[in-house]
Length: 326
Ligand SMILES: Nc1nc2c(ncn2[C@@H]2O[C@H](COP(=O)(O)OP(=O)(O)OP(=O)(O)O)[C@@H](O)[C@H]2O)c(=O)[nH]1
Ligand SMILES: [Mg+2]
Image 1 (cartoon, rainbow, N blue to C red):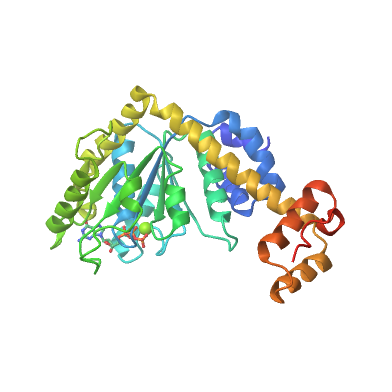
Image 2 (cartoon, rainbow, N blue to C red; image 1 turned 45 degrees about the horizontal axis):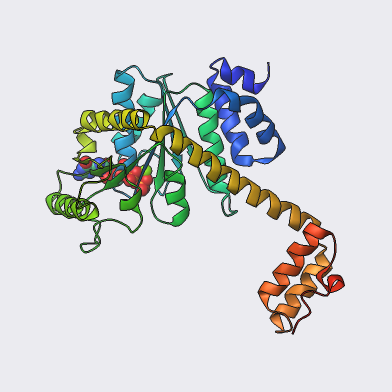
């Protein structure tokens, strides 16, 4: 039985192997995706993002427990964790996380970036597909909301939870730029800490300013949690389910799914074109063009045009007389 068949039959080791294959990429990953893709599209994908150390992992752990209690199977993907999954800081966290992973209804995996730009987004997207085909009802993806690519990963989800916390040494900027905008649910974690009320009020104000008329059909709920004590997990899980119900009832689920498909397709086409182009470009030609740009004989746009044109037409720009304008 091949890996995908074993995955579909519920074999955890096959799931783990396939996620590794997705990290590595390449042909076998593609073939696996082609085989398992018809079995995807059923999971509720939840992105959990926020600044480092806000308590995302702890919260994901509590949410996983809560959803298991509701009879759902759970997949967890921690993307490029700044600290080992479970926070790493406390031994207690680690032990709790280990307990969680002995439950067959929970599959946990962390993924690290492998250098190439965009590689992590691709690998994460494909790992989500593996867990979706594996039959997980809920897939949580934890990403550190630090840069643009992380925001992209989070927005590849149906529901995005943005986790904030007091005491991040950043009083003026309550939340990292770009994160507020993508939140379907806003969480102020570490509500036991000083300053939590202030963080809460700031976010509340931002929400009110965001939609004076209340025109948006989904108003992101703002919740307080103490993940370390499991407080607020029930309310948060309710909000996650309410958001999914809203997406279904409003028809937004279909549009979001369609948008995700388009974004993914665009990303893959872009990467594919780039790979093919560079696979075809002659090394000498590349160096000669780069040299001309460096020596100001050619501007970079014209140089790029000549490459891309020659890729599509199989002719060099010099031959067509283009790119020689100087
Ligand atoms: N006081 C308090 N501490 C918390 C709470 N939730 C998490 N922590 C602690 O905050 C630290 C960071 O928690 P994590 O869950 O690892 O945070 P994270 O956002 O996943 O961190 P990164 O993945 O490294 O970005 C740990 O020491 C947690 O025990 C909380 O509600 N209150
Ligand atoms: Mg974490």
